[in-house]
Amino acid sequence: MSEPHEGATRVLAPVVPSEMPSARAVLRVGTAIVALDGTEPAPVILGSGPACTVRLADTSVSRRHCSVELVADGLRVRDLESTNGTFLNGVRIESAYAPHGASLRFGQTEVFVTLVSGQAEALPAVSAFGGLLGRSTELRRLHPLLRRIAAASLPVLIEGETGTGKEIAAEALHSEGPRREGPFVVLDCTTIPAQLAESELFG
Image (cartoon, rainbow, N blue to C red; front, side, top):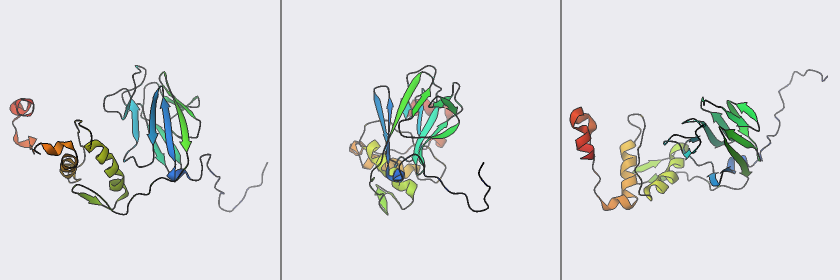
């Protein structure tokens, strides 16, 4: 039995590489590959629901089953109060860090984790996208995602608190992609009577 000590606790090196802040994570979900590089503006949500980042065709998976996020300490996995649980290397977890080579299981779906160390591209000191200009880490991480979305002809729903710049983001998505060929129309839904909203929006 070791002797007690009065000094500061020694911090053990993590299992993941020390280069983890610039590392990438690759998740293999069946035949699909999900790559994370740490610039994602929010955790990646896995589940069977249509709003998930990675949608799983597994009836034993909850609509919002778990989230994964590449952070300084590694790949953080959180169960989102799923029905059948999230398992890391066979152990049910609520929140944990997945090491290189780990196996995640939710429902009947198994996911394999690969961590790749390397130098990620540094975020610029100031980032601009359309009318969005900012220095915060969150905004600088958001811009690459917005650029990818702007290039795709997909319907986009932007959510957020009042005053967070949703309309500016919508204008930027319109002006920085193929949508700019058409008009940008602002519709204040609070001015439309409830009985006319459906016909006004959808014809």
